Image 1 (cartoon, rainbow, N blue to C red):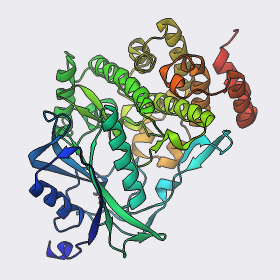
Image 2 (image 1 turned 180 degrees about the vertical axis):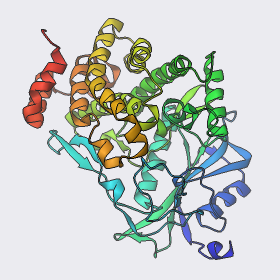
Image 3 (image 1 turned 90 degrees about the vertical axis):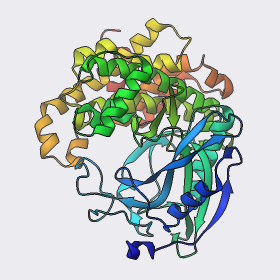
Length: 447
């Protein structure tokens, strides 16, 4: 242990959120962890440490809003030997103990394409910047801090920012300073909503903490029934999906765009039954964009949450857990859309949901066909080659939902001259030969 503690990192506090009341000793503990005076504890594989406060903090504006744990991002990494084989490598080798942040590039996270736009607003694939293993740039830590600050000030449930630190000059990555960000959350359990949809809580008895987290969520939402039941789980997912739809709308209304809405990037506030945004280091502010790009980016955020919710029903852990009959009957995608478009015609939302399911179902059953090999033999690369084309799905969802989007309060805040015809032209230019398939999915057979 003394060898690890000798790797103490000097730092400077660059930003502190004035909207938090926190005990001075608690703050010192958190800074000691961020600087490796104390060894960080990592609740799971990754670069996020977790610390439970001895004395809860609170919001200045709402003193009864208690913050009981801290998320510390950029302070190192942990990659234990039982890491899922379906995840991209985090380190070159497994490690039983966490390591401090390094200046070594993490290439794997920059190889997965994200659907986005050119500077002229045309569809394209974009890639994340390469990040240092176990660390983040100070600028990315600041993005998370500022985005969380914006959400707090707008009254949108989120992690609460506390401080941003910049590490000493030796911690530079490609000529830019590295740092860390400390944020606070109301619950002490380091789990995310993904446990409910596709995580360890799907397999009762694998992780008691995950099981307890799922049970607490069901109790919080008033969901009765057998914890092992598919329909009980889908009833829970439906309630959460509607909340996530609303949160996505509120996120854009707060003036932000570009969030990765995996359910693994949402936490839960049990006391207030709210969804919390948590992974905000890629999020940007709308005011940096011209009008048409604001419309497109908000529309992309909507397409992203639809895709990421639907696609995770085809992840390896779920392939023998959900039946098509129950997925379509409960239809969490419809609930998600209803949360976003709370005043929309429900029949119209149902028709859109059904078409989006129809796009996904052939790929779902191709994955189900190879379930045993996927879960036990295939590499991540081979499995991904069988997945639905996410760029096609994004374009389909965005195009289908645009007429409703134009009537929403999000479009009212970010109006532009973008038309449905222009969206169709963007799709035709980008998709090429796939445009014919896109039209089939959009209009349906015989329509």
